[in-house]
Image (cartoon, rainbow, N blue to C red; front, top):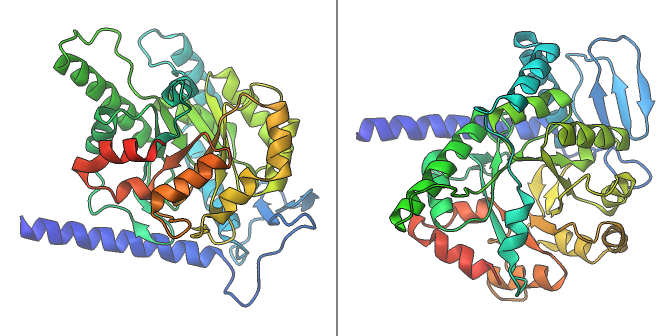
Length: 381
């Protein structure tokens, strides 16, 4: 048993080293900062491997894929790797075939249908307007490495379901976070089984029980990925606004709506919030203001980035148009401390600034198994 544990730790260490090295190689060497547009946004190049021409579209510059090319930011490198990943998937299953499979699944009563993700989140706030905690399951962070010694997803989801999580986020990215699309299916099945078990324990027959719906967290650039996640059993998906042009946001939200997936938009700047003003009502069900720094993919450990966005004029304008869309916070929640207090003080500051709730990944991973339910309650101010 000891030998098995040592072998598992060695594999985990090797995986950590691989991911952290990859994220470091994505960015600049420190001597040169990543290029930015006049509005302060990162300039990212999307590689078009099927064409020999280069063109510029707003702050996104298209160019021929070259082996000698080096990404200028972690976001750019992440996007390049994700494009390569999607190309490999297309080689196995064409877009036409995947679309056909999705359409068949949508009419097959035996196949799982997307559930309402935002409904239970809103209900969890209650009449008192409690701060809603949405746990996130992910294997690792690209900068800091693995979040747990053993990532037992079914067990984690079972714990979160038993603790009363209204919804769950699952990171399915395999480039930087060590996830897989199969994790979505695993999480959905595990939450369903746990919810039924909880119902039986309470003396009910398990009929009509509602399990926490699943949000798929990934870097989504193509409709192909949406179809894959739909088939995997996702109920909602996250779109990273900093990686998309306005036209891409419009297109992907329309595709998601067509296949009954709810959309959560994640932003790291006021410019990105302003981009969302072009979306129609109902295009997104929640907005996430993140403490993630896209240039390095590390976090703002002070937590001030999210607080600044919550207090910004851009968010005030967003609320005027999309007043019923909850605003969540992501990144170091449950870890960041504020005003000389503990992590709860920072959560209180977020709530006071207008946050509806938070998606908590790293902070939840630091909680002992027996304290999960208590932590969710303590953070639900």
